Length: 492
Image (tube, rainbow, N blue to C red; front, side, top):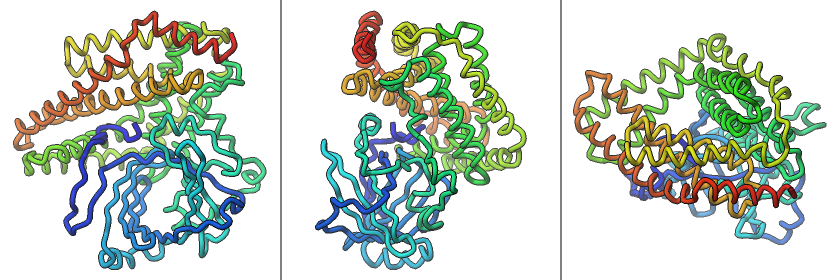
């Protein structure tokens, strides 16, 4: 899913704002951004739309902006960074906009936007900037799903991709201006494709898996090195996701690595993730309660607000402790991750045939199917959480081989992802219920527990329905199908 954790209330209806505008539901914005070397010839003769944007706030993970586009006025809040972000928009009338616009000074930019068709229902939004940003040309392509985004192969004229480069976000451009490149960057732009979490048709499979592993290690280290202050929480969250992807890859090649090597490598990255877990766990509990309050309007206000305040205080205290202890747990995690970087080249991956990945993919599918049955028979928090872990293994591993047949495997990847989101939200609620049970000062405990249980039941019903589709094949049939895709793709 595009949006993570228990913020996955993806079906919230539109609602009228207090002053008459309309707010869109919290939605996932899936887009990739590119830096163009020059104005494309294909814009000649086209008319563009003038856009002005100003930023009311700009934190590391959240931005709130005003946009005027011809006669339309909007307030937009976005959270996250990179290819997938959460977004909510509120339409304003002209008077509301003009009342807020002075608060954006001097965090503003102006640009003209042109739409260029890319075929297959996709468009590039090409932006030519004015004022202090004059000469800058970027393009954004928005997608309906992460699968569609991963399958997109940009034409050469789109130039260098900067989706993960915060300096080219509109908010950073408004605040900092055009990024300056060092001479080394100008001479050799970063090859972001080397970190793609997928095998490529032209590469040796065992070396490709090492490349993917090194990419996750390097990305996690960069996040922890570059973040500071308020940005540390987002960096830790991103680094933990990198480590989870890496552990999914390790399970894929467990048979090739051998028990001893697998246990050592898995323990290395598991323990590093645990050192970083405190601040994120506290944040997730707060986010889960907020999502619960949005879903159930009749929750008792006094009890929920009191609990929310306690969680906010604990989250802030843990975040402060983590920032003050960068030389402690964060540094310890970084040291462990860095130590694993050199070990990757020594991984014993001898096979480059189907035998390299067959045991891992077969086990993930078979174990996930069994976990589904256990969760259906015993819908306890532990059973559901175990199913989630096995579904995540399958999701990570199928992403690695998705290019074997994108049109067919892509749908399975999306199903596995959606399932992990449903089960993840269920687990977050279980953690929240445990937190509630440990407190003595929260009023209306029964009503809050009932709301948690009701939402968990909704999520589990949806997960079981999706799970029966995802795991419909018998394990042998699934294995043979993926093997046929692999052999056709690899020519073996």
